[in-house]
Image (tube, rainbow, N blue to C red):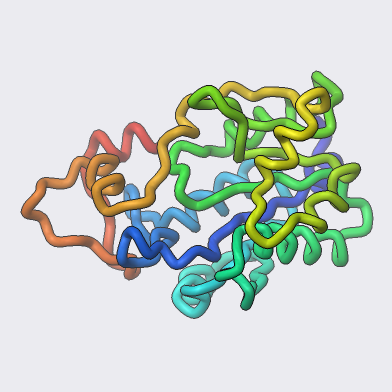
Length: 226
């Protein structure tokens, strides 16, 4: 893939949820000293995606502070409570309105800790190999994000109902979908237990918040999340 074609693939990172089940912004939880939102931003950048758009919502101010040293486009979705579709629409619209030659968009979330640059590059490579309009990750007997959508699907993404996610588009258009095997995609972080299990914290350790000095220091977690 040429550097030029990579530059025409943008990314929308969904970071608008309020993490109610976790009790703190999951986007700011740290693994190996880096927040989940920074990890996914770095992965997208290393994969050659540009521009990188981050959609914020309930914890906008905290996440913006975390992103001060990054070169990302931040979109505040003030309607985030109405459903994930509002965030997808906001992020895709920002890219479509600002990038004239955008070929595709990769949709990413913050709480899949095993997504790396290699994962995203795999989606892009499979798109070129299979010549499909959608490349979706396959895990746990289903298809979902991370997922790449060709420009022919931009209008469908922009027309999602408030509570509908990108998966609804994927499942409606299976004949146009290339499947990227990503079994690690089944692991996400919704609760404190999920985070503790991932980082193998001892039960009596204090909960580590999303501040700049907080981090998960388990060697096994660092190895598994690289």
